Image (cartoon, rainbow, N blue to C red):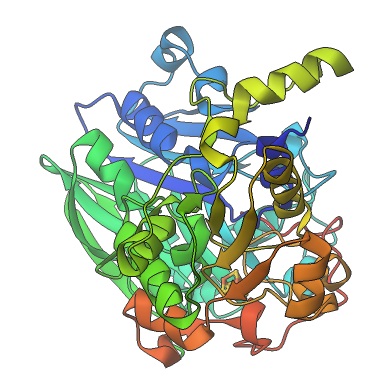
Length: 472
Ligand code: SF4
C-alpha cells in the first residue's frame, strides 16, 4: 500500500515558513510564541525556533522537528523576556541542518539581531559577494539578509533595516528582534502575508490570522508593502517605506499554502477554496454519484463542487488525524499496514460508484495517480479528477519550494496526457481567471507565475537551491 500522506507532503508545494513576533512586557512571550507557532505548523514542519530577549540577554531554542517535539514546559521556562520572534521552517532537500534553523541570530558587540524569514531572496548570491570576509554558519539567504542589515552603518536598527531593504530582491515577510525592540518588515511586492495584531496592550505579528485566533489576539492590519515597523515600550510606529512595487501577493496561498481558517487580504481562505470548487463544477460538470476530497487540502473545494453540482459530498479517503509525521522508518510490512492506519480508502463507500475526486493542485502527479489506483482497486466505476487550480508549469522563486520544471507534470504533459497517466476517466483543471476571481483579489495584484510563467521580476532560473535554499 501507499503512504499517501507522505507522498502528498513530499510532492506538495511547500511554502514555507511561518513567522511570529511579540512585544509584551509582563507576558510569557515564549509560551505565547509556542502556541502561535503550533497553529502555524502547516507552514513548515522541519524545524522550529524561538528567540527571546529580556533586554540584556537574548536566548533561543532552535531545533529540527515539529513545534511539539522541539519545545516543552521546561525548556520554555528558560526563555524569559518581553520580546520574542519565532519560526517554523520547511527546508529543501539537503538543507535541513541545525545551522539553518531559524530564527537566525547574529550576535553583535552588545547588540544581537534575531530574524525569522518567510520568502526567498532572488539576489542572495549577489549579496553574498559583499560578505566574503564575514563568517557565516548557514547556507540560507536569511543569514545573508540578516548580516547585510547588521553591516549597515546607519545609527539605529530601524534605519539599518530600512536602508538595507532596497538591496533585497525577492520575497521577504520578516519578524526580527533586537534585545529591546520588535521589528516587522515586508518586501515591496507583498508576496507573502504578514499581519499585525493586538493582544491586550501588546502587539503581535504573524504570517496568518489563524495564529491570532489561537492566542486571543485581534487583527489590526497588514504590514504594508515595503514598510518597516518598530514596536517597543512607546508603542508601534512605521520607521519608513521603500518605494512600493505593484502588489504581487502569492495566489498559491489561497490554493494550498495557508490554513483554511485564515483570512488573507480580507478573504477567508476556506471561502476562496469553496468558491474554486463551485466554479469548477460550473466549468467542468460531470455525471457522478459522489464528490470526494483528498483530505485535507481538497476539502473546502470539494464542498463547493458538491454544493454547485448537487452531487453529494462524502468521505471516501479517511485520514487518521491522530497520527503525525513519523521520522522513524518502519520495516516494509509495518509501513504497509501503517498507511492503512493513516489514510484508508473505504471500499464499501466507493464500490460501484462514479466518483469525482477534488484536490487543490497537482505537482508531480504521483499522489493522485496512486489515489486513482487505490480507488479502482476498491471498485470505483468511474473516476473523474477535478483540480481547483490551473496546471502548475513553472517553478517558484519567491519562497515556495517547488521541484524544477522537469518534475512538474503540468510542464511536461498536456492535460490529455496527464489524464492518461493518471488512468482517470476525466481530468479538468480550474482556469486561472476563475481562480483569481475566487480569491477576490485584483488580477494585477497577485503573483500567478507558477501557473502563467509571468514572473513579477527577473529571476535567475539557474538558481541552485542547494546552495542558497529556497527558504522560508
Ligand atoms: S510563483 Fe507566485 S503564485 Fe506561484 S507559489 Fe510562487 S509566489 Fe506563489
